[in-house]
Amino acid sequence: MEFKHEPVLLKERIQALNIKPDGIYVDGTLGGGGHSEEILKHLSSQGKLIGIDRDEEALKAASKRLIQYHNVIYVHGNHDNIEQILLEQHIQKVDGILLDLGVSSYQLDEKTRGFSYMQDSLLDMRMDMSTGITAKDVINQYSEERLSKLLWEYGEEKFSKQIARKICKIRGTKEITTTKELVDIIENSIPKARQKEGHPAKRTFQAIRIEVNNEIAPLYETIKKSVHCLNEHGRLVVITFHSLEDRAVKNAMIDLQGKCTCPSDLPYCICGYESWGEIINKKPIVATEEEQKINPRSKSAKVRIFERCNKENKIQK
Image (cartoon, rainbow, N blue to C red; front, top):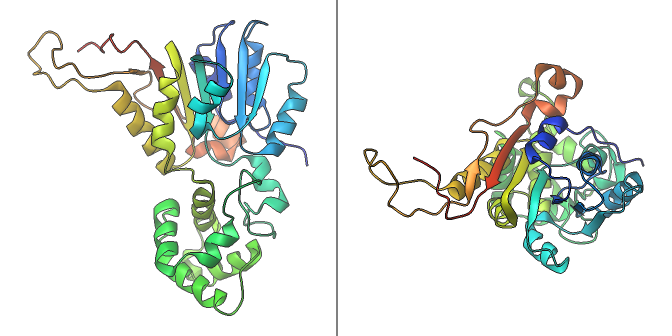
């Protein structure tokens, strides 16, 4: 299957990176290579791009798309391990990092991956098919209490308890193995009158996908690690697609910027607070109405930008 993906807020993100022609940049979520191609267009032959993805199919697709470029390093890995990845490439610091969080259109559309509630397939949902637990493991092995908590925290599913209870009842007689079986359980757990706002399985599938791929728990630390890997004036640009991701990114950036605790009447800072840089956009960049009409996935998108500065250069009061 062809790896297709319509990048959201692409122009805005590339501009936000403030690319230097001879710089080193990281696309931490390579996907089909759409973002990387735009970065490479701004780089000279002396510049370098490191493309990271845990999906081997994405790496194959991106390498074909970017075949004309000879300054790309492809890494099968997880952006959560960015420090180790750069160390293995003998790179100390980079000039920019781009993270596009969430699942790609290809992964949703690919029948064998089990991400979509619109197609029947085996319950998998792993971005990295070579390792880790599957959606089937989560559905059939987690306790009712753990499932309910998972659906509520990661999916904000109001009927989490009912769905978890139904899952445990059904799996008591036979193992749940397909997306269709799970969708049927969800539809039978939510009152018909409450199934008018989008597909009833949307929140549950999101929650399970996040759990399988451990998308939220390490994110706060990943943002901090990424900033630590930047050269001075290097930028981290992150796009999120739901509130849990955005909250983790926002909180990490706020903590990285630091906060002066001196009395407001002091003309300069004496508290010695630590700052790794500055949040460039106080409010996240969102898609225009025009883009939202063309690409519905952009409706929930938020872009946040952080610029690294020397720790000695405190943010002015």
